[in-house]
Image (tube, rainbow over all chains, first blue to last red; front, side, top):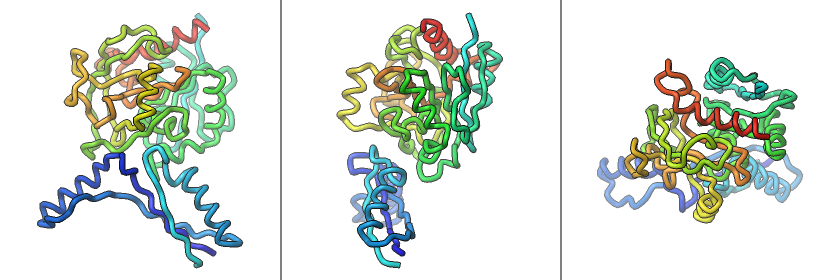
Length: 82
Length: 235
């Protein structure tokens, strides 16, 4: 069994209005040094696979097909034995 | 003229399906039927597919991301590949973009707010089957109701859209000027609707089915459906 922790976020070239709103909120709370905030989502997928390479290939395919929209988002993930 | 057959796709969470059905059937006197998303095939004789607005699958993950894998979507794809007309409105636009039938994607509105309001749309050209009865530059008053209608695509795609005349509508002032103030959601280049390269698939965030009879406060949306009928008749 493997646990994939997938992080999906908007590409750098895409404006993230949610991140901007959170950055402004942090500023108004007195956190002066905040330069930028980018929002994203974390998806944890527990999956059965024979070997780590298989699990990695499977998670790649999941990200490309469904979990991320590559027009606007990019993804990265870590994989651990679970 | 024989009635054209429109298939309106119904997903769990669609909420403009009956509005579309009403306009196509009762107002425009065409044959219109609802098609449940689990059906493997569109009804025989479907001339045009309408993917209506709503919140398919609760907008989980991303708007339209799950609906695009519904069984009926394979046949919608085949219909589009054969040159059949497909109109996606609001969530329908999001679904068609997620399905790769239209370029780009719809992001959160720049204001982060759900916006329910009238907008003005400038018809960019009358060459597409969806705008053939309109004048280029004609202004239509059509409402929007969305939280994720902020159109985005990369710079190369935008250039291609422009070159090939795929931008169907832009948000504008009542007099047709495209200004930042008239852009309700932060859409790139004020884009409100795009077609695919072949011109037989249109996605738009505004709701033409909500302004297709005078009793509802406007009829500007009808020209889109009537253009589609005119295009179908020419075939």
